[in-house]
Image: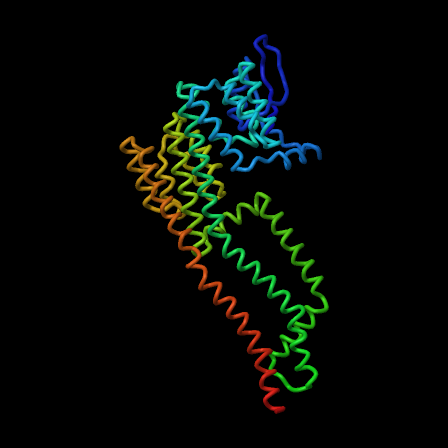
Length: 403
């Protein structure tokens, strides 16, 4: 992202301009490294041009591509290959048209003397705050190789966690989508033909059969309008969920869905524990670590809780004090973190929590299909039952009377 800055140069002159960085803190750090004294640094929130927006949309790097880059980078650096050579090697064998120019730019910046963390920070839409800060900590401590390995490991674990959840939700999503499509076709085109038999016989039918007749006739005449309204509604919902308010509300709703809500909660707790432990091991200060993790968790509700905990620590408090106030944080988590803070073993405690909740996520994802299948069967059974009772049964009774 871009930041507007106002700073004093070494000669006392006032300088203004923009700088690319992943956060305000990183922007300040970059200015100081360039011999400037920051006076004001704020995010540039002005609307971009159409070409800039188009570039942002088309320059997205998916997690799988990023994971491959980190794996290759970590392997080459561990093998004592120079950084510039490692990046050149990855560039030559990469087939990703979006990633290639970024790798080349990073390599050029490093050859010009820029630290790796700052070269990464120039691409905030690709590299997360977590990765940038871990690499920066490795540069300061002299353990750059270990930091890159940590980043590769963390990215892989986050990718696997997300893949498990996506895979677990794919089956029920597929069943619901197919059932909805078949239901739409049946009501719009098959049902009117069945109910026409009843209409032609001009017999009295129950109110629920008459309602199905009316529904079938309406759908047969206006199926295109219903389909149009449906897609407009879905588009509007998607746009709303992409807004700040919509995303915040959806994040709250996700946690309250039976079974699925528990799965999401465990995923967020795993991300929190796992990534915070890695940042603390890497030597990142606790307050800064919490601020980074607040965005890594990817849920507005947990983000606010973690930021409140960071603020509490900043003024001399402790993490567990804030966590005890929120029902979204299980008491076990708050109590274990308290033990970690009291004994100075918070990183080890967080690792134990991450292992525990990762196993819980595995267990739920393995059992999710068996948990959801009965619900889906009941829903499909009710739909078929309504069709039989309100349409097929009256037709059968009428046929029996005629015979």
